[in-house]
Image (tube, rainbow, N blue to C red; front, top):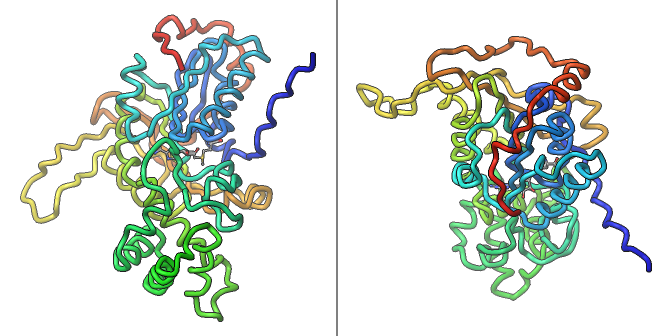
Length: 367
Ligand SMILES: C[S@@+](CC[C@H](N)C(=O)[O-])C[C@H]1O[C@@H](n2cnc3c(N)ncnc32)[C@H](O)[C@@H]1O
């Protein structure tokens, strides 16, 4: 009898992988969270350094991506003879990361990564409707199990609200013209597919600006995707939950791909680092902030030109990182600009032999 060959994983290069590992410094026995598993590219690299005694915890709201990534990580365990307990994955929104980890009995993390945004897998799967380069349904939901599709959103909103979405989430300067085209198309019944939405943006752009650096539909698709998935509302709760669980010295690394996300991450990390959130007109602080992390990069790091040439999708990536301080206000974590020494490979290997497994400390929850 012939056995079925495993499905090949879509090709995917984890963005700024070396930089992420340099900051996270996963070591044997550690518990690391990848809050946005995607296809598990970063996660597998982290797993390789914390196995066989540590645990990689992964979340994704996209059930398809989650199952591909879980299969990939489990296959790595089988190939290396590591226990399956090295990998724990959950179908969840990072907005709920605190609750999910608590229910899973995970009360401390040695490091955490959030690689926000849309994955190559989602973009390259026409039936998900994320890309204007391929014909597909107007869906764009990361979590296909519920919520409003792009089609529903585009048919429900008023022209004014559509323009606001395109302006606020896409920073699209032709937001009003595109909103008008979208409304005209939906009256005619010609707003059914990604190609129709792409055509609405194309038609709205002045002819002289249709062949610039960005395709006219780029910002429209970004805006609609962000609105459909309510992407921005998950960032702050996710970062706050992760920071609360980080062990002292543990790093929280974020990758973002557009200025709205980066601004929100920057503001949330500043708050976690102790910057007051109160309105300036208040006579005293009521937000009660205390430094829980120390920021390790003042300006976001960007991919090298070599990486961008190899993987053009990395071009807009911005990496920020902070480390948990001992107690709020004690400031024992490395400071901005301080060189973090990456442990040499032999040290990892020595630790791998000596570190007791965390698996007995973690309750087992079925995937
Ligand atoms: C850029 S990809 C991650 C790629 C991954 N680092 C890798 O190496 O394969 C982003 C992933 O995060 C997921 N995602 C985005 N927002 C999320 C959220 N709020 N909660 C959970 N997952 C989210 C997406 O579904 C997508 O699979």
